[in-house]
Length: 286
Image 1 (tube, rainbow, N blue to C red):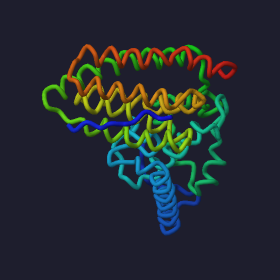
Image 2 (image 1 turned 90 degrees about the vertical axis):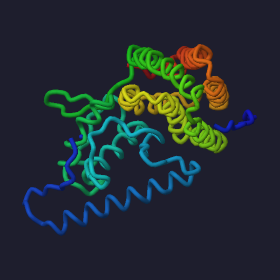
Image 3 (image 1 turned 30 degrees about the horizontal axis):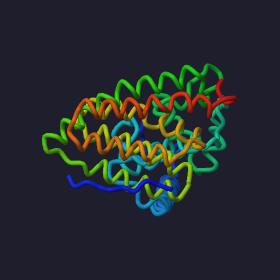
Image 4 (image 1 turned 180 degrees about the vertical axis):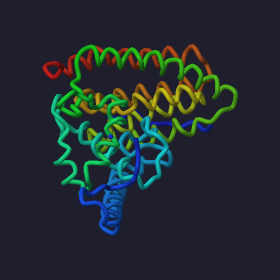
């Protein structure tokens, strides 16, 4: 039974497709339009399935902030390829430790290898692939250190953000981002879709950062939000309703304006998941 939610008031990035034979501008334009249209249809379908999660300025792949990408035109092929490949890595369609299949990706998305190679640096910066000599881009393998590192970074970043968020709210700042994130999360937990739950859970943590109104924290969160979603999805067997209840408590602590209470609740919420995460990942760590 879900707890009742009581809301309080308050691969670098060109867009071109290169053909080995050169030229063919009409075909390049058609391919770009087809991929953009396909991306819009998929995004629209996901938004409906998760109660309209995707909001302006938030990533389709995480349900929250855009990941650490250079500023690109909305229709950039390389950006769309980045989002698609990242999602497929999270879902396990490109297995950990495997070489990123450039030719297969190009055929499936009907693009040349150029947009993928432009997207690879973004994927590497966000912790999804590593470039290997003579092997190209290889999907990252989760190991114990990677899990611990992510938890440690989250404690350093999110606990401080919760404290600052409480300060902002205590000074009259809005709770809208947190309330919206909780509404979306409640719908997805009820729906039971593991990927949607992972995305909306990440979106709530991003909303805490947003509420802190600290630009540098926002930038840092962009660098790890994709990996947070990935790990949430890999450990989707953990009770989602318990995590949702924790999020309600953290929202309420921030709403109180008490900085110490907010950071204490944030710390307990993140750290409490460390051991269960390792247990859920048993046998799957490199």
